[in-house]
Image (cartoon, rainbow, N blue to C red):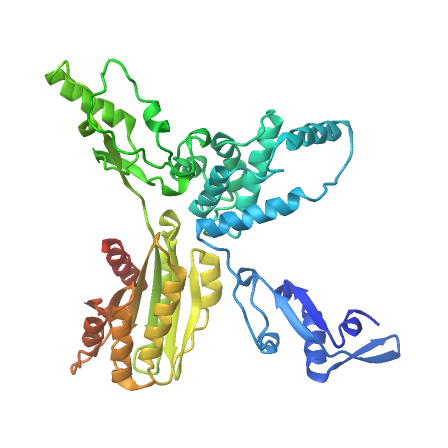
Length: 496
């Protein structure tokens, strides 16, 4: 008796099920169909019961399941890492807290023993038991999201490496400076996006990502608690008191400077500070100095306070929604869809954009490619698109909007580009398509209709769909993928 016999009447869990060798997949298929396993070796045969619930897990980017095995699963659940910083921080905190209560093991030796002893002594002094403070935890998660690292391993590695570095330096708590020092080691190999990219991210590109994510006050200057009356403001405490005399004007309440609430992005200028704004020291000094040149006895007052104006780059999710019904030109649309997706992904890495593909034909709409930034994944999914059948335009609009909404958040702009002639012949026809377009108009997703209607007699239905969607409408006479990709790219870049 082996594993299948032990699983009889229970659950068989297979991790990386898509990487199982073919002969093991064949065994699973036979057993799942018959409920018993037959083992034959050297003329001896054994038969035993093997009825079980099969649970498998896999990373789709590492390869697809064989269709025969895929059909054996009744339910499928997609598990993704959270993009909300608060959720990531909480997950990492719980994992690190769990680890802090365990034991470590590994090779022994004088050097390793000395390092372990040194780290253990530091850990005993550290109140968090190996868990960094909230500022470092949140900054680590922001940095992992900034470089597009998959999963939560990058967040965990950043925190663990920062704690270790602080311990080796004899300090109780890691700082943002520790995070900066370990970031290249943790992230350089985790942000690869395309097959032609180098194995590790170029240092200058990684440096920009680190600066974007960690352009925050030092942990020692950050207080997540509400300001108490009379408490000093860390940012203003660093402002020079001489040669300026502080006037008697009422001082605005100090601004909270938590990492999560600090303005992000590249500073492009400054403006007068409001009651809750963080103060930009150099522009404030410059404004006060300019006024003092006109009046040497002028005191620093509220009107001199300035805050930085920043622009944060936003990533985009572009979902191409393509009609693959049996109407004339379906094959050309299929080729255009594949080429357009790959064309959009060619420069998606620089903006951390993601591109997806939804097709509709017959009586269904299918997500062929979930939004991704990987050209490898796209190439694997786009081979052999099938055409034919009616045109369920309403289903296509529903599915594309759903995919775009799921893949976007407050830091991402979403665009659905629909390639169709507007002739809805299935799933409720034109009325259902117009209703779906009206629902689209009420969503937060931007729309673009690429009208591929051709011939002498044109109905203009794609234009009606676009108008109801609140989308832009562009007539496409050439289905050349590069031209379509350039059109979509330019339209996507023009949205606020």
